[in-house]
Amino acid sequence: MARLKIFSGKARPGDDYAVPRSELAGFLSSCRQIFWALTIFSGVSNILMLTGSFFMLQVYDRVLPSRSVPTLIALLALAILLYLFQSGLDLIRARISARMGRHLDEMLSGRIFDAVIRLPLKTRGDGDGLQPVRDLDQVRSFLASGGPSALFDMPWMPVYLGICFLFHFWIGVTASVGALVLVAITILTEIRSQEPAKASARFAVVRNSLATEGRRNAEALHAMGMRRLAAARWREANQRYLAANEAASDVASGLGGTSKAFRAILQSAVLAVGAYLVINQESTAGIIIAGSILTSRALAPVELAIANWKGFVSARQSGQRLEQLLTLLPKEEEPLALPAPVEAIAMEHVYVNAPASDRALLHDVSFSLKRGEGLGIIGPSGSGKSSLARALVGVWPQMRGKITLDNAALGQWSSEALGKHIGYLPQDVELFDGSIAVNIARFDPNANPKAVLAAARAAGAHELILSFPEGYGTKIGENGMALSAGQRQRIGLARAFYGDPFLVVLDEPTSNLDADGEAALTEAILNVRRRNGIVVVIAHRPKALDGVDHVLVIAAGKVQSFGSKDDVLTKVLRGAPPLKVVGDRG
Image 1 (cartoon, rainbow, N blue to C red):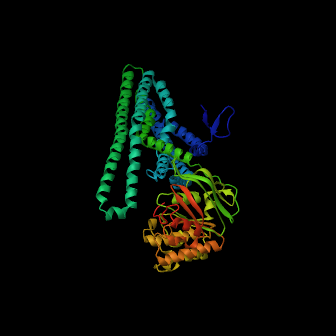
Image 2: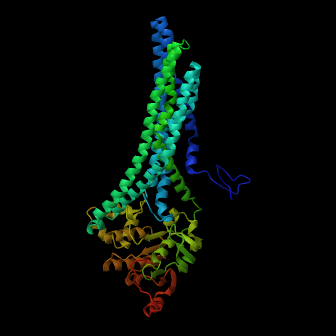
Image 3: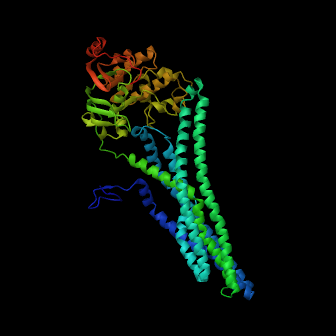
């Protein structure tokens, strides 16, 4: 079995293979100096925690017997000064923890957002797509809370217990037994809280997914009277989430309450042991009070850890999910910049599968197009037309074969670089919250207004946009809900044409267009070809083929025919192969 070792650096001799250090481990490494600072501040703060114990010891054993008011005032002034100093250190610790959480967010938030966008291209898109963002918030919140402080305070517990032994052996034994019981409670908390916390996180994903799904399909739910049924599904998922969350809270609060009660009992037990020792003249009254205070302080980190255990478990699970996500979607390295494609695109024996699926949707597809050519793809519903379009623009993975632009495989470009040379109109047009101009310009902050206008005119959308009260500055709302389906398609077409990309792939571009829109689309396709670009059109209506000169017929994921438009359509109309020219979905 191959040995898997995770470390920072190169492979070590004798390792079969090695995995680079994770990004979360990289964050922890970048915080090394912060951890040292927290360790130092925690150490000084814990030393200052002895102030109360020793102040009471001096008052009972020195001030009261001597009745010295100046000594009392001097001790009180020193104690106040030390308390203020300790308070300042604790404030600094809290602020360092908060800034460490912010540092995590600043370091990973961009990667997490990028992973959220790329995740549907790698998986089936099940579950709550925003869970990684919530996971990052959970880890950041835990870092900024009091939980990590308890971890830094715990190593000082033996020091406090040692001082208890210095006061008297039996006081030390009593405090040590109490510490062992609290540690046992902490371990029990860890064991009993794991499953409820996992169930709570799992049901939270289902609940949020149903809410997002309902929001996205609001029109259908309302029109077909499905709102109550959808609400019932959500209530069922919410009840499961509440039950799991309640179980996790019950474990944490129950064991937390037990630890608090035991700590109070232990403090009284220490007082009782101390009183017994005083009665037998084996100790002083000052040690009774000092030992009680010191025992309470020694066990405080354990109790704080138990109180924050739910947050710790949630943060740990969130960190594990983020780790898996970032491993699944590693950071894209920026390859060597290639010249802009200007010649051809080709598919060579390509097999395509959907994300997270091993079943091929396209089988052995091969064709090539040169600059200035246009291709129409036709075939029945479910034949693989849209899968072919997604593969052409690099959205869906290839099982085998190669897709090249000017002899360079798509993988030799980063998505950012490749996107500048591609215009894509998906079957279901999605727009973003913002103005029409910003959507057309693909959120380019340095967009040329002339290029935006040119893209809108190419899509036949210029007059439509001017008809809005605010023109190109019109806010379209989330998912473009302020626009009709036809208007969204026009804006999506303009976005595809923005920047004069070399390859333009349009998936059923006429599905929501009227006759004038179809004529404008045909002219736009011809304009792309005139400037030596390449156009690929998934044909929903025969009219969409007016601007192309080649046709590819596909059925059951296999190419049935490819060639000039006239030759292929003649074969189709003759019934060889027996395919429908129009397909609503592919």
